[in-house]
Image (cartoon, rainbow, N blue to C red; front, side, top):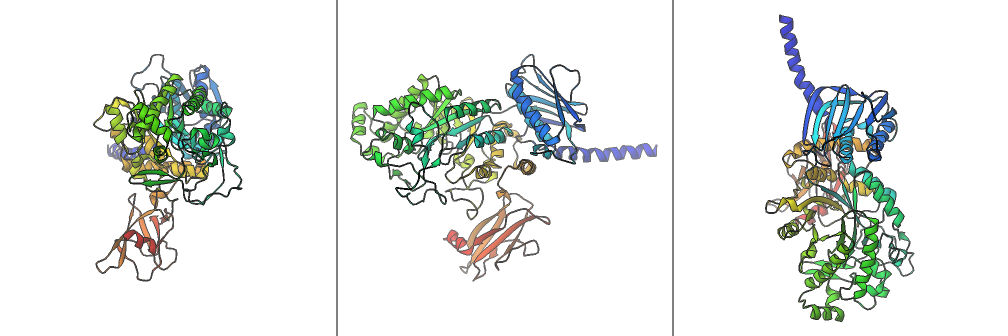
Length: 634
């Protein structure tokens, strides 16, 4: 009896420990709707048999599963359409399950096998992404990983998305990214169940999509002078400098990208940014401008061409299309005709943001337009342009979308609005009965600095991971059915290569993914960040770059009563120790440990800091010039 009692106590004590172990193995981003853990685990066999229904619609799901398992494990893969037993079963329901919809799934892992069930192949695909996150991190290895126990914890998951629009915007206009790099970006985003890639294809720095009826858009408009440094402050290129930096996607490239994305259940939405941000188009076809002398313009390389003031935008060169010129609308009809044939997605984004109007104000043609159409403000002039453009887009069988500036002066009857200047524009559009995608700077701008500006390319604002995680796309005051979803935007003025694009996207992209997929009530940063750290381990295996900024100290400068300088240090995540030095040496955990506000020594020139978790350095060594702290106090 005593032995039985002791055995009962032992089992009682072991159970919570096992439960904790099982839970620690599960770190899925975005958080599923419901997760139930069980004892036991599935062990991947030497030959992995996958049972799947026949039909080409299953191929994209099978391809990603086969590629991941075979690459990392070296296991042989056998695909069967009919089988009584299999390691992994992919099952499409015969009768649609209304709970999980088109993108949801059920995932059941038992010691005897794995079953993923969904209404549509998209649901199976997302179930596979979750399954891969349940496997050891080495599943992301680019070669066979050795000495790995290929197991999956026993679990039942019910999952489906909160929003149908889960997007990332990739600016390929400021700096050109190759077709292969865009494909890589798609591969990265689908890991976290994003389903919309918004390609910003045109801007002052380049026109990136071939329009066969307008060849100069790419022969001339796709190239500028290569410059490196602080974008926006470059010296103007010399007249004879070679204009060979840039590139564009041929129409065959676009078709290949669209198919590649479709095979991963991603839609691609093109954006042609007009009437502002159109210098590349104007350089190619100067007759599109209101301004005499436009034939002397050049595609921007990053030199200063725009003043942003509290009173509005002032352009130093006219980077706008002329709303009073009928040739502009003929031009746009040709562009939209070819875009509509290339991109099957329902929406075409036509920009509309940051349109400087100072050159319009000087234009006799614009003044005549205003008199003829009874327009009294420049915002109404842009509204006239947007409404005509909306009709062009709709005539090609597409829906018109623009940035929230298209609200100014009056919104077109069917326009969808992407709200970027906070959520105010989205609220206004939704109250007018228009569809909205929320993409506010306050939470979703991936070009913003994510650490102290002493380490990051200088942008005018900072957006930390914890702030991104606070994103909520549906304001209390609007009809939630009009909020299609949200997206994060990666503008690339300061992003010169694909590794930096990865660095700027992740981990903030994790936060956006969880906001757009997971139930609102399941969001919790305290449980989210440990999952982020698990994803960091997976990215290390996959050789994907990410920002470790969340581990960096945060500096706050202040003044003591005696006018001496002080500095307060903090961290974005708890549990980190900060060590520092003022003597120009490199601190480690044997240096002074930060415990409270520090007075800066009178003659110190720099403060060096590093964060530790226990005995392990986890943050980057940062050097803060004392002069910078003084500037911040002033």
